[in-house]
Every structure is written in structure tokens, then in C-alpha cells.
Length: 230
Image 1 (cartoon, one colour):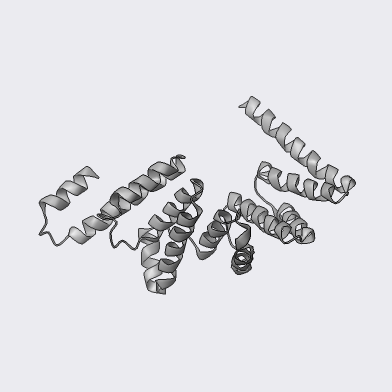
Image 2 (cartoon, rainbow, N blue to C red):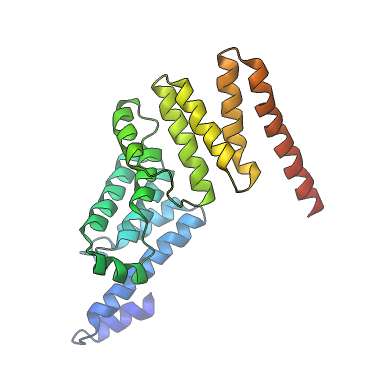
């Protein structure tokens, strides 16, 4: 970063300055991503704010806004997170097919469904946004190739929304559909299984609840066994 900045300042008349500025903004975005992946959401936000009016001024990088949204979300700054995700979505929607191909090479672009998922997750605690969230999930495609953890998260959020609407049947359907079609690591489904058991027990279906609780306990035992072996 220091080397790039010094070059930029030294060769102010260079015709390659726009390329260097773009590379500097990419470097900042990579730094934000590393901080976010490392659990330092505050550092990720600080990196953005420190360069917002300089190197990132006028930047249309979608990944920068998406990573910023994730950092704000993890800091529980919901309004800021939603604003950043909204900016990322607006920039994504402006791309022509050719521009999308180009930006896919230069950036790690999130999909529209990924952005919608994060907006829903960020706003899940706000009961006043239930209708908005339900609308978002109607736009999410069931066949979207989310990563394994995101598939689980999507199922959990969808079931929570159904519970808020007092539609236990839909909540159970979302969770059971996730469980039946899951092809990833079983331990990632522990939250879903536990929630199914809780929903069944809440409605007095203790016989139906027990097998799901047992699946959670079995997964926990197997996980502990694997850790000891390693």
C-alpha cells in the first residue's frame, strides 16, 4: 500500500494513474476482506472510513460495499449494513452483461441472492420489517447454489420468518426440507434439528420432537470423537 501510494504521488502526470488508483482500491478492499475473515469487523470498517474520501472516493467496486455490509452486520449496526448492501445491489443492477463479465474478473462479485440473504439476516431482529423480509425471500430462488453454511442459514432464517408469521407448518416445512435435501456436513444442521424439536415440543408433539433432539446429541458426540482422534 505504501509503495503504491508513493508511486502515485511521485508520478502525478503518469497516464497509468487510474490503473494504480484502481489497484490501490483493490488492495484496500482485500485488507477489509482479510480483517473480516479474521474476525476483525471493526478494523474492516476503519479501513473503509480511513480511505472513503481519498482512494475509495468515486469507487464503484461492488465487493467493497458488500464486505463493508458484512462488517457492519457483524457489529450489529443494522442501518449501516443495510445501506451498504443496498449500494452493492444498486451497483450490481447497473452492470450490463459485458460489464458483469469484466467485473467478475476484477472483483469477487456477490450474487443478487447473496445480497438479499444478507439483508434478510441483518434485519431479522426487527419485527417491523417482516413484510420486507418475506418479500426478499420470495425473490430468493430455492435452487440458488449457496455455499453450505449459507444454505443452512437461509433455511433457519426462512423458518424464523414463518414463526414470526405464526405459521409453524411453514417453519417446519422449511427446516425439514433443508434436512432432507442436505448433502453437506451433518453437524451444520444441529441448529435446524434443535429448532424442529422445539417447534414439535411447543405444540405437544413430544414423540415427534425426540428423534430430532437425539440427532443433535448424536452429531455432538461424533464431533467430539473426531476432535479427540485428531
